[in-house]
Image 1 (cartoon, rainbow, N blue to C red):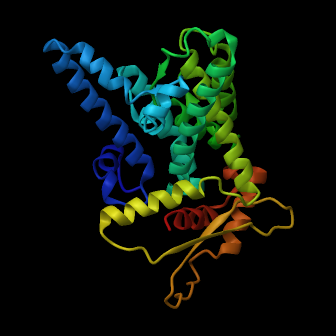
Image 2 (image 1 turned 180 degrees about the horizontal axis):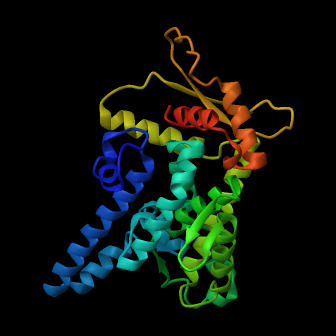
Length: 312
């Protein structure tokens, strides 16, 4: 990152490898825009119109309604109304997102958030349309919030480096795998409660977060389509045509583990790698080490090389 939290947030869109703060900034901006509209429209006697308009950005459980507003499968994951709702989502996104950014880089963090949001939405729709318990409420059920994407990042970080420790108030040091397990169990326990839709989305995001890291260790990046779309829009809005080709391969290791990585190449002659710049083979070994023993097992030089590689 480039400075303290507020500096990073204020300059979120000035850097290309800053998806953590971009996601937080987008969620905060959307929250305040919605808040302003809600206050002025309610005071102006247009509260019903506000509610109707907002519903077209929320994720419906009804398949016929989803067919009329397909964009909501994306818009819902950036939408909040309650201050505590967005506060806790952004705190968890910040805490666990830093780990994903540090280990895997900015693009894979964005991949996890978007894929988690999509998986949460699909799991929510699937259960609401199949489970008899929700048959009476499926047509009227709507969902909003970043929780599914955040859960994907939380579980993804816990799968990637389960023994990383957070210091919690009153509890002291707690390994993140226990934090993730606690919240997944809590969501499962509440999946038949008042916020059943949200809790089901949490579970869908959590499953995606786990599968994403497991597949990444096998050399399969489930987020490649999301990344390609992201690069397309970056090039579109920046007014430049990308000459960078992104290729993926399975990491070659004796243990059969490792993460898929990407090599950036262009049609021009590649510049020689300096002695301080990590090679692909070195990064594969570092990622294998994280998979086997956790991030804490890396020495200072390995952490530096991983950090530099994540910015590419």
